[in-house]
Length: 229
Image 1 (tube, rainbow, N blue to C red):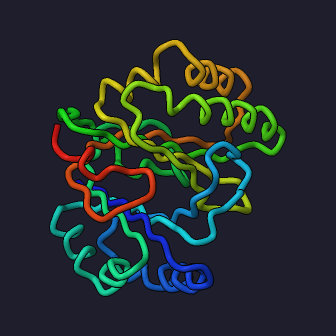
Image 2: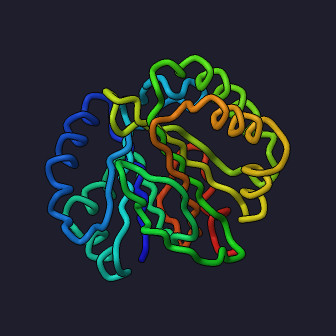
């Protein structure tokens, strides 16, 4: 099993047409075990869908590396290569908890993290009554991220605006750095405990991935930092 994450930026006025095109054509990739179009949102305002109208992402999980390569060679993916900005990440599923649209996208896969960078993905459906505490906690966590050891980049996303389905993407220099942020005492652990006590989410999922390869470019991401450890 292998996952891919594409982040794509278009000139203003073109992005919505390209998003529509991606929505129409992604069903051509029947080999994907799971896929979702991600609409980037401002991380500090999560879960409110304050969008970034020029960009979107595409996350997919493939049963084999060959299936992922066929996607990379498709007309849609090649079209993204000609955009203003395009980042391609190939990912090794390592660990997950919970559900996303009722399923675990990586089907309970368990693996060992290598020495290189890792990507953390969270996804949740926020209860309407819990919007305020989640927004306050999200802002504090976002403000603290640049000070976290090993933090490389982070952003938010939405995939179903009408049900407030949102999530986060964050890159870390190593699995140890990601684990330190996620579980050690601090603002993030406090927020996680508050969520558990307050039942903020109707559904939630967490996934950890090793970065196998990275190419292209994206604001705030140093591609060289995503090479093997």
